Amino acid sequence: MAPIAYAIHGEQHYEDLKSYKAYRPASLATGRLAAIGELFLLQHRACLERAAGRRLAHASFVPSTSARVGRHPLGALLDIDADPGYVALRPDRTYPVGQRQFARDWFRADAPARGWIGGVVLLDDTWTTGSRVQSAAYALKAAGAPAVVAVVLGRFVRADRPAAASLIDRARARPFDTTRCVICEA
Image (cartoon, rainbow, N blue to C red; front, side, top):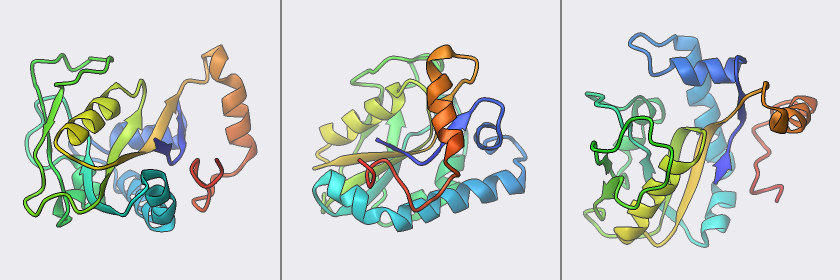
């Protein structure tokens, strides 16, 4: 799992991630998120493929578990669902929207029409507990994906949580730089 940036509660990246799914999202928020996501994927494709142990030929995203109608904002933001290697995930809507635990059957995925020709980059907008990303990755693997690497636009962090204080201090001490990632620096 590779978070692109921390989304510290109340700060700009957090607010962008919170608002881009709104009925009328701010164009600045969507523009910033699209730029960060696209730039990261371009700059770190080799890192992600090294982590996967193979070429990444497919893309997917964690769908909304609410009853959202129409194109998902993350699919639109990064144009993921237009990719020829796109693999759709469908949520089981019997799970509550606030579900925060891994579930093997939370999502379903079908194998791509042309078969699996590489690994999958699984994108999500936010990581809070990781339960949705882990459940979605499980569904992709169950459908036959040879490898799954997850990338999230923002790892939510709350400044009012004592356990997060040192993490936030370290994050604030280093300016955001798209050329760095957790995989490159590991």
